[in-house]
Length: 466
Image (cartoon, rainbow, N blue to C red; front, side, top):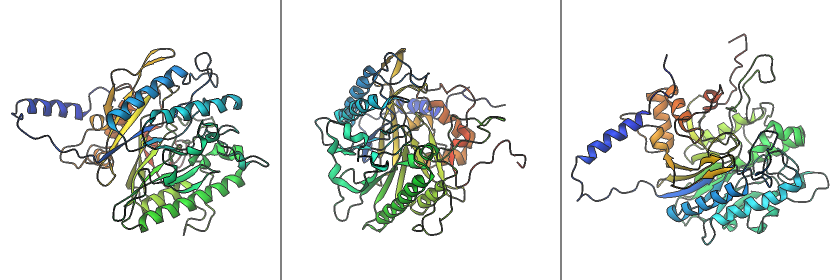
């Protein structure tokens, strides 16, 4: 039986072979190769800052981000901004500690938002914020704004920043295209409105907390259904607008909670988890009329249909929430991969992963071409070391099969799955999922099922018909 993690990825041996060959060649007079990348952006997620994180555990077991870790992360991010000059920064949600009191959360919102602004201090680089499930004043998985509550004021976590008027796109609010401020989603030109004749990049920042079972538990089924229909209608309109632009725009979709299976959970007989757990509740259907033929469909299927129909415009999907450094193949309803969902690892270490920040490169067509993850190593219970620019690249751990086109991250992932199989792709992902090279998370999980986002749910492993 083939065992995981008993060998280095093929890419490492390929790199050794290439390095040996190059060392034997006379290249001193050769001009440097042109860079494939035409731009970069920074991505980080899930700070989970706790005002008492240096002295208590949250939810009874989690050690969250304290001031020292957040200060270190800001310093490292600032260095990366100077070294790489990213065109924009994306933050995919969750600012405060889990299970914390509302009175603490207000100061935690301020500390984290001001820290994100500090990362780009002295520059004009915009920071794009997406709402996470903990980013509510009313409680986890609740509405982004108090305006959704009877008699509630129009207050969101952004109101506690030192410069609330600058958010949700710090250094770039003027470039927002469309926004629902109450529910926290918007679209934006992160590098400014495109000049006539140029291909623009439109970032669609979703609030996918609305699609979760927790949102139903907090806000009720009627409010969830209305908010879900409205956001999907809006998404359809944004994708249509991008496709009708002249020339058509490219689109990056960013969110906190990804579609698909929750890789942490494992179905177990005679427990409440007898089926795979989905990040977007299976009970939520689209009941609107604006999206043709979609009424009555599961919201995940509606989303995947929209993504598939705009495949030529969409260049990437980014998400947070899992705290891990994973990937998801986003499939159409025929089961074919149409996009890659790149997971942004957390600053917090409460799920056992190393704190991390990504620098992601893209080419002339805005397709992602490389992803370098910079991380800190744990040196004590509450201490982490960012020194030394410790990092690894996507291309190192997801080795390109011989003769395959791996010019983009999506093509690389598709090539591995086709040429070497899903086992190899899962192996490559688990090698770095905890931001600890060759140190995968212990225990049985549902990462295999989480690797693919599909239009229909997986059958339960305990279903007697399977």
